[in-house]
Image 1: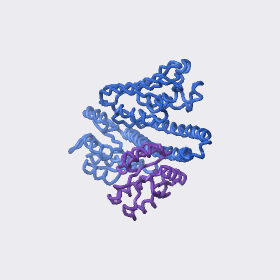
Image 2 (image 1 turned 60 degrees about the vertical axis):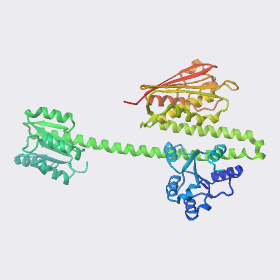
Image 3 (image 1 turned 180 degrees about the vertical axis):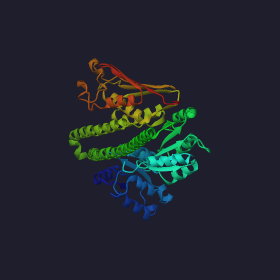
Image 4 (image 1 turned 90 degrees about the horizontal axis):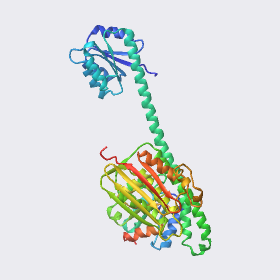
Amino acid sequence: MLIDDNKIDLFIHNEFIRKMNIANSVMQYSFAKEALEFLQSNDSSKWPDLILLDIHMPIMNGFDFLEEYRELPLQSRQKCNVVIVSSSLDTGDKVKAKENAFVLELFEKPLNISKLMDLLTQNNIV
Amino acid sequence: MADRIKVLYVDDEENNLVSFRANFRKSYDVYTANSAAKAFEVLKETPIQIIISDQRMPDITGVEFLEQTVNLYPESIRLLITGQADIEVVIEAINRGQVSKYIQKPWDWDKLSVAIDNCVTLYTSRLELKYKNEELEKINEELNKFVYSVSHDLRSPLTSIMGIINLTKLVPELRTADSYFEMIEGRVLKLDGLIKKIIDYYKNARSEEVYDQIEFESLLTSVWDILRNQTNTINFKLNVKQEAVFIGDFYRLEVVFENLISNAIKYQVPGNPNQYIEVNATIDEKFARITISDNGIGVKPEYVESVFKLFFRAEDSLNIEGTGIGLYIVKEAVEKMKGEISIKSTYKSGTTFEIIIPNKHNL
């Protein structure tokens, strides 16, 4: 599941995932709220294994999303991994992201495909 | 001040209260009380700017009364009226900051009037300072948000461009255009580097200091981890001897090491099979001493003095991407931490930076 208000970045990340050949399907959301609604209304079988989450987004930003995410069923959350991908230089953002228990890793944009791949293999996600 | 100043006068002699009121009611809103207990009732009801008390009262001294108002009404100005005999008590009260002013008996109305005027000036200037400080804090906070949102908005399209360039590397048909994409990438990286440096500069220019416990081994390793993908030919040697707990400014140290190590990577001799960067750190109770050495291109003797200047680029470094900001920021950051930095360089054989940062532990 890709969540990013920037359409180009959604496209880039989707292409990366496609070329890495690691996903059966990719969901793309420009609004974190819509992504959240999907997770709220579906059981874990429909959940993604990986969420790439942007931080700076209008209406609901990445941190707001994570606040809501913690309320979702534990069983679903256990099979899902959240990776933040952001171009933020705010050290406050970085610290906040790393401290969040649901965040597996924080990557700076542009997303480095081999770093993502390493992370996914290390954590047995692919 | 649009509002009239409110003055409270506390004295056990009714006559004094009456004449005080008669004398000052034109200039101020006058409140009076003939005991400390009554005075506290007034203070509870009304915000009083200036509290005046006689020292000699039956149940409590003036100093004791004023002392009790300090924590409850810290912004008020306190004035004590006292006779010669109590002078020691007054001096102590003033030194402890409980009383701002005092007048000695015998006093006349003119003397008291001047003293109250002085209190008013003190009160208004303190208030003004408080407003100004609040205003500054607000502006600072807004600037903070502004800087980060501008930097994010500037970087966001750049990172998209870099992402697309990375994508092209996965498309075989686009291989023929690789050299063009490399040129685009180079320029984009340069602009991105400049934005990052501006943020570094801003982070460093801010006055606030944040102290953390620093583990140099992990700090330097994490800095290297960020930078290591810029090179695959350099042998990085790290020797840390940390013999004491070190308290320091984590972000400034990070900025310093990032810039110096990234420079050591950039200014290597191309094609040299023995490229190395050696970082030695010794930390004791008083100082952290760090040296960062390389066997890179070095700096010509005539330029060594200038490397820390803003926007300075040595002429033979011009073919290497740089902004001329990095070492300036490094020096500023080291100075903010009350430390020292020096450079020793031999042209064409290498450069060593030495940094000494005082340990804030036990200070």
